[in-house]
Image (cartoon, rainbow, N blue to C red):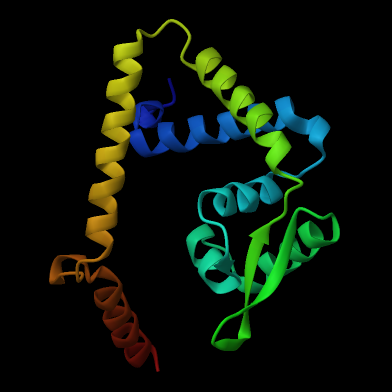
Length: 173
Protein backbone atom coordinates (compact mmCIF):
# COMPACT_ATOMS: atom_id res chain seq x y z
CA UNK A 1 0.00 0.00 0.00
CA UNK A 2 1.22 3.50 -0.73
CA UNK A 3 0.20 4.92 2.66
CA UNK A 4 -2.56 7.08 1.22
CA UNK A 5 -6.00 7.20 2.75
CA UNK A 6 -8.21 5.33 0.27
CA UNK A 7 -11.45 5.95 2.16
CA UNK A 8 -12.64 8.40 -0.50
CA UNK A 9 -14.65 5.50 -1.91
CA UNK A 10 -16.73 5.69 1.28
CA UNK A 11 -17.12 9.48 1.28
CA UNK A 12 -20.82 10.36 0.79
CA UNK A 13 -20.08 13.39 -1.41
CA UNK A 14 -17.77 11.38 -3.65
CA UNK A 15 -20.24 8.49 -3.91
CA UNK A 16 -23.26 10.70 -4.65
CA UNK A 17 -21.32 12.58 -7.32
CA UNK A 18 -19.88 9.43 -8.88
CA UNK A 19 -23.20 7.57 -8.92
CA UNK A 20 -24.89 10.64 -10.44
CA UNK A 21 -22.17 10.81 -13.11
CA UNK A 22 -22.58 7.11 -13.94
CA UNK A 23 -26.38 7.41 -14.04
CA UNK A 24 -26.14 10.36 -16.43
CA UNK A 25 -23.68 8.53 -18.67
CA UNK A 26 -25.82 5.40 -18.85
CA UNK A 27 -29.02 7.38 -19.39
CA UNK A 28 -27.31 9.26 -22.25
CA UNK A 29 -26.28 5.93 -23.77
CA UNK A 30 -29.83 4.58 -23.55
CA UNK A 31 -31.47 7.62 -25.17
CA UNK A 32 -28.72 8.57 -27.62
CA UNK A 33 -30.97 7.73 -30.56
CA UNK A 34 -33.07 10.84 -29.83
CA UNK A 35 -30.11 13.05 -30.70
CA UNK A 36 -29.82 15.44 -27.75
CA UNK A 37 -26.67 16.18 -25.77
CA UNK A 38 -26.50 15.77 -21.99
CA UNK A 39 -26.51 19.55 -21.54
CA UNK A 40 -29.60 19.83 -23.73
CA UNK A 41 -31.36 17.09 -21.75
CA UNK A 42 -30.48 18.92 -18.56
CA UNK A 43 -32.15 22.13 -19.76
CA UNK A 44 -35.21 20.31 -21.14
CA UNK A 45 -35.67 18.31 -17.93
CA UNK A 46 -35.63 21.49 -15.83
CA UNK A 47 -38.08 23.17 -18.17
CA UNK A 48 -40.33 20.12 -18.06
CA UNK A 49 -40.54 20.48 -14.28
CA UNK A 50 -41.03 24.25 -14.45
CA UNK A 51 -41.79 25.55 -17.94
CA UNK A 52 -41.76 29.22 -18.87
CA UNK A 53 -38.69 30.31 -16.92
CA UNK A 54 -36.62 33.35 -17.72
CA UNK A 55 -33.18 32.55 -19.05
CA UNK A 56 -31.69 34.20 -15.94
CA UNK A 57 -33.77 32.05 -13.55
CA UNK A 58 -32.92 28.96 -15.56
CA UNK A 59 -29.20 29.81 -15.49
CA UNK A 60 -29.35 30.24 -11.71
CA UNK A 61 -31.24 26.98 -11.26
CA UNK A 62 -28.79 25.08 -13.47
CA UNK A 63 -25.67 26.73 -11.96
CA UNK A 64 -24.68 27.90 -15.43
CA UNK A 65 -23.39 31.18 -16.75
CA UNK A 66 -26.01 33.03 -18.85
CA UNK A 67 -23.93 33.20 -22.07
CA UNK A 68 -23.32 29.43 -22.48
CA UNK A 69 -26.94 28.76 -21.53
CA UNK A 70 -28.06 31.28 -24.14
CA UNK A 71 -26.08 29.42 -26.82
CA UNK A 72 -27.55 26.12 -25.65
CA UNK A 73 -31.06 27.56 -25.83
CA UNK A 74 -30.25 28.90 -29.31
CA UNK A 75 -29.47 25.36 -30.47
CA UNK A 76 -32.58 23.93 -28.78
CA UNK A 77 -34.69 26.63 -30.42
CA UNK A 78 -33.16 25.97 -33.86
CA UNK A 79 -34.01 22.26 -33.43
CA UNK A 80 -37.58 23.04 -32.40
CA UNK A 81 -37.36 21.79 -28.79
CA UNK A 82 -37.98 25.19 -27.14
CA UNK A 83 -39.29 28.62 -28.03
CA UNK A 84 -38.58 32.00 -26.51
CA UNK A 85 -41.27 34.53 -25.72
CA UNK A 86 -40.94 38.04 -24.27
CA UNK A 87 -41.44 38.17 -20.51
CA UNK A 88 -44.45 40.26 -19.54
CA UNK A 89 -43.34 43.46 -17.88
CA UNK A 90 -39.64 43.12 -18.74
CA UNK A 91 -38.57 43.95 -22.30
CA UNK A 92 -35.05 42.65 -21.66
CA UNK A 93 -36.08 39.17 -20.49
CA UNK A 94 -37.25 36.14 -22.42
CA UNK A 95 -39.26 33.23 -21.12
CA UNK A 96 -38.18 29.81 -22.37
CA UNK A 97 -40.95 27.32 -23.12
CA UNK A 98 -40.91 23.72 -24.26
CA UNK A 99 -42.55 22.96 -27.56
CA UNK A 100 -44.90 20.04 -28.17
CA UNK A 101 -42.00 18.18 -29.82
CA UNK A 102 -40.88 16.86 -26.41
CA UNK A 103 -44.25 15.63 -25.17
CA UNK A 104 -44.38 12.38 -27.22
CA UNK A 105 -40.94 11.44 -25.87
CA UNK A 106 -41.75 11.93 -22.19
CA UNK A 107 -43.10 8.42 -21.64
CA UNK A 108 -40.09 6.89 -23.41
CA UNK A 109 -37.75 8.97 -21.26
CA UNK A 110 -39.58 8.03 -18.08
CA UNK A 111 -39.44 4.35 -19.03
CA UNK A 112 -35.72 4.64 -19.80
CA UNK A 113 -35.13 6.31 -16.41
CA UNK A 114 -37.25 3.76 -14.53
CA UNK A 115 -35.40 0.88 -16.19
CA UNK A 116 -32.07 2.50 -15.44
CA UNK A 117 -32.92 2.88 -11.74
CA UNK A 118 -34.17 -0.69 -11.64
CA UNK A 119 -30.87 -1.87 -13.13
CA UNK A 120 -28.74 0.41 -10.92
CA UNK A 121 -30.40 -0.73 -7.68
CA UNK A 122 -30.75 -4.38 -8.67
CA UNK A 123 -30.28 -6.59 -5.60
CA UNK A 124 -31.48 -3.98 -3.10
CA UNK A 125 -34.85 -4.43 -1.44
CA UNK A 126 -37.38 -1.73 -2.38
CA UNK A 127 -37.49 -0.58 1.26
CA UNK A 128 -33.77 0.23 1.23
CA UNK A 129 -34.12 2.18 -2.01
CA UNK A 130 -36.99 4.18 -0.45
CA UNK A 131 -34.86 4.88 2.64
CA UNK A 132 -31.98 5.98 0.43
CA UNK A 133 -34.24 8.41 -1.43
CA UNK A 134 -35.59 9.72 1.88
CA UNK A 135 -32.04 10.25 3.18
CA UNK A 136 -31.08 12.18 0.04
CA UNK A 137 -34.26 14.28 0.28
CA UNK A 138 -33.47 15.19 3.89
CA UNK A 139 -29.83 16.02 3.02
CA UNK A 140 -31.00 18.21 0.12
CA UNK A 141 -33.43 20.08 2.37
CA UNK A 142 -30.75 20.58 5.03
CA UNK A 143 -28.27 21.89 2.47
CA UNK A 144 -30.84 24.31 1.04
CA UNK A 145 -31.53 25.58 4.56
CA UNK A 146 -27.80 25.94 5.26
CA UNK A 147 -27.38 27.96 2.08
CA UNK A 148 -29.84 30.56 3.32
CA UNK A 149 -28.09 31.07 6.68
CA UNK A 150 -25.39 33.69 7.16
CA UNK A 151 -21.89 32.26 7.32
CA UNK A 152 -20.51 32.53 10.85
CA UNK A 153 -17.02 33.44 12.04
CA UNK A 154 -16.02 29.77 12.10
CA UNK A 155 -16.23 29.71 8.29
CA UNK A 156 -14.23 32.89 7.58
CA UNK A 157 -11.07 30.98 6.66
CA UNK A 158 -10.78 32.84 3.36
CA UNK A 159 -10.67 36.22 5.15
CA UNK A 160 -8.04 34.87 7.53
CA UNK A 161 -5.99 33.54 4.59
CA UNK A 162 -6.16 36.89 2.80
CA UNK A 163 -5.05 38.70 5.98
CA UNK A 164 -2.03 36.37 6.31
CA UNK A 165 -1.16 36.79 2.62
CA UNK A 166 -1.32 40.61 2.88
CA UNK A 167 0.87 40.51 5.99
CA UNK A 168 3.43 38.30 4.20
CA UNK A 169 3.41 40.57 1.12
CA UNK A 170 4.16 43.65 3.30
CA UNK A 171 6.99 41.77 4.98
CA UNK A 172 8.54 40.83 1.60
CA UNK A 173 8.23 44.39 0.24
